[in-house]
Image (cartoon, rainbow over all chains, first blue to last red; front, side, top):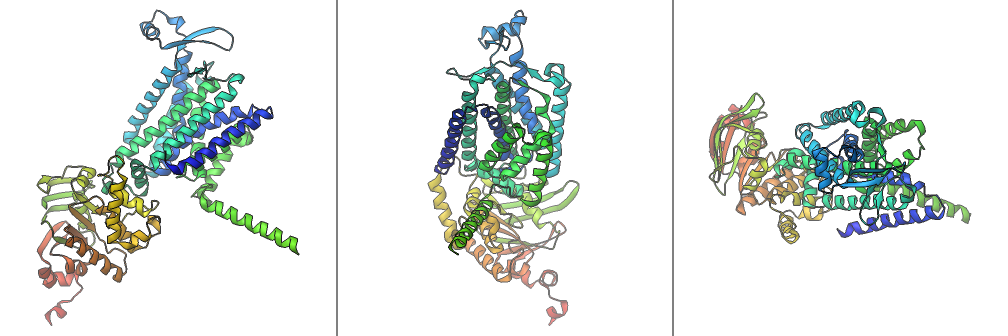
Length: 362
Length: 244
């Protein structure tokens, strides 16, 4: 970890802990639920920021990667192994000890695949899909890349909406909790609220540390050079095709991991998670955060998702994110959370204070 | 150092280079002059591997690089300073230069990098003043210095410059060409493509004239400067004034 990361990470950690203490003291712990969800969505946004802001490649299909993570784990961990004990594959899974037993919401015992296994499967599957579609579509640039990724997102949405295995329009529910080590579990039980909040926060902080280190490294410079000019990067000896593909896979994996954890936390997933508007809102949040600004994306990701999940935008949710995208593109292409805006804010504050002082003296 | 034989290259079905041959000896400055669309830039981009060679061979120090990827060619010691400089605007001067050393710096070798940055800063003191400024905020001349410095960071055996005079004030062009001459003094080999034929021939040892993808003339700088056709087509002199 580089010294420049210490302070923001410390501030972020302090904020996370302070919020939990305040909310618990006020007996309002239900706020943590939406904050946990926002943290997972922000993980998607962090991955997308590296792809869009730093490497300069747009993706309007990230909700699809998120859904791939969520649906993979949903299908695999809701399959009742006890009901198919004769199947050789099931025997193998049980024989290897890859199963686990949980108590579902109705108090019944179920034997199912361990979420650790489904997490690994989901990550491998998503990485493989991102890799395979990345090879042809990352040759495209600008609008064409946006359209290709949009098309991919629509395909995935239609598949989950139309497939019996994925629960069609109902989605998949009754997922077991994801039991991590040391008694920690990712699940929707109200008793798990506080620990889930910290699990999500931990993943988010770990993600941001990982990505800031990546950005400041030699591969990070190479990524940013691709954003500047692909041809010049090429002329400098950077293998641009490989880098674009790697960062695309990396950001897809971020979305997938967020999908796996959030689906276990929610206990289910529906086709709305794969909707194109989801992808658009991710892109909008990256833009508001300031494109090449991990911290801005993180803050805006948590704040905007939280407001959206708490229902502050009501039925205008998609309208709000659409408007945000338009306003940002027209008036603040650099994003909202950039140094210049803070300077303007500080200047205005100083001016107001000075005016107040002058007013008092008179 | 560089030997190109019967090179054909182009974009899609369009053939831009039609059987180009040339050679550059170690320690030489060789310039290629020609008008718009004559294939000068395509030639350099083909040597750098950005445009694929369709036919012919490009020997760099005894090895054919015509089928290699750009990153392999940079590692083999041939760096391009691209047309229009193509500075990374959102990266600082320091980061731009560090990126130039990209193929050589595997792992974290910070001390080495600092020493090499010092070499470039000694050559272009203006870049040291602007070390932490974004590339996009530099003037055109400074950007050209940065582009050259960035290419040098790869420690090339051969530096190819694509129109370093583009869009610069005459006084700045003079400075840049002076720097290029100094580069040769430091033991570099240079292949220079220019529209500004007079400035290029003044510092070059030899030159080629390219027209519609074919080499039409070759000679020492002296010979080319005194050649009637060159004078008329590229140096802006009329037959009448040549005759006088």
